[in-house]
Amino acid sequence: MDSKTIVITGASDGVGAEAARQLHHHGHRVVVVGRSPHKTNAIGDELGVDRHVADFSRLADVRRVASDLQNAHPTIDVLANNAGGIFGDPTKTEDGFDVTFQVNHLAPFLLTHLLLDTLTASTASVIQTSSAGARLFGKVVLDDLEHDRDFTPQRAYGTAKLDNILFTQELHRRFHGQGISAAAFHPGTVASSFASNSGNFVQRMYGSRIARRLMTTPQKAAGQLVWLAEGRPGTDWLSGAYYEKRKPAKRTHPQTRDENISRQLWDRSEQMLSLPPNLGKTTNA
Image (cartoon, rainbow, N blue to C red; front, side, top):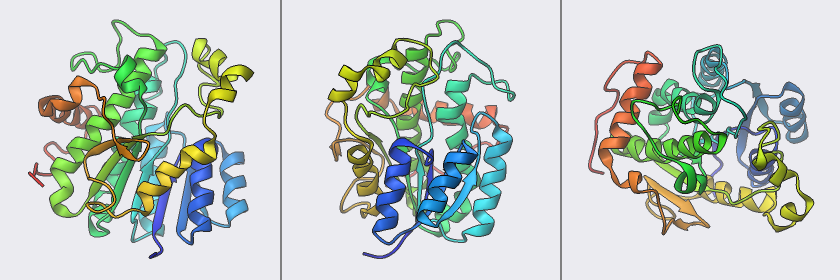
């Protein structure tokens, strides 16, 4: 297997950290990005790999880490947008966006955009860690993307994970013809520190000893990210698809079948981030 340069966000703990360990063990050049300086440096030191600290609730951090990654790594074979989480009451970031929407969608959307030249030149794979919560709780409302009118932590999280899938589909449509492949996946219900700051029933569930016994381990959940990162698009997996248990998901949110929704979400996200409009050309690849 050829060695790849693989950037993993949200790599200081849980699925991201375990994926970094497995991919490093397989001989890849892993780059870890995380919010916690202590945890990010700990996994970087453990593996002896490049590490970058960035808090995705601050878009300035996203822009800084994108610049640092471009300077340090002229080739990026895989970008794994794994950072995310469910939070509590509606909270606006210093950038003016709901924290759930920004951390789970806007920040990885911005990071991917800022790295597009490098990713295109590298014929890279871009992987989104999504969730089955997209189907259960999510709904994209184009004039209320942050659910200001009907906010609940579960609804905000489910919609952000649906955003991940729609972004994956639109990234494929716009850039697959230029060499980029994209996939999203559900890692399963993972016994990790996920939801530890949500302050709601999800936090209580993830903290329950009984419930955690029924959850998958971070090591097992990371296997699907590793499979996508090491796999060959078009041979091992299909670009633009959403995966559960290493297979295209049988049940998906109805909005994932509406190309107009994914196109408008992309355009609205560009506007929110003051990015150049109409970036990339839709292809039929």
